[in-house]
Length: 112
Image 1 (cartoon, one colour):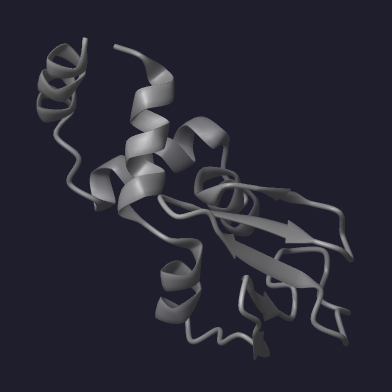
Image 2 (cartoon, rainbow, N blue to C red):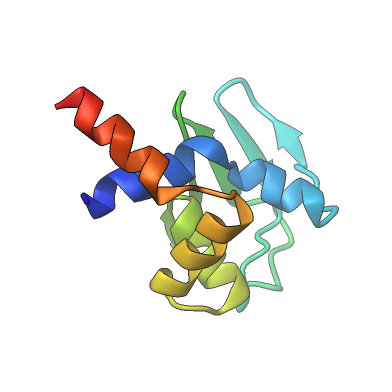
């Protein structure tokens, strides 16, 4: 199975902004193309001016922090926020989203 397909499926089903909302972290601003937050990432607790942005890419969200210069997608965010490996973040998100790998495989075959 294509690992990129699994990653894309996870990012399609979950959002960084929802993850933050579940932890009562709200955006400081909602611009037309992005949500702007005080940076929630470890090691950037001194963020006094909102520098963490979430960009809606249509089928997924990406983030970039102008203060700590970190960015990526949902899996990278979870990995950095929770201090776990990228692989563990994929596993956690797959379990939490009840992603049935056989269902994904059926769709991969249909698309080929």
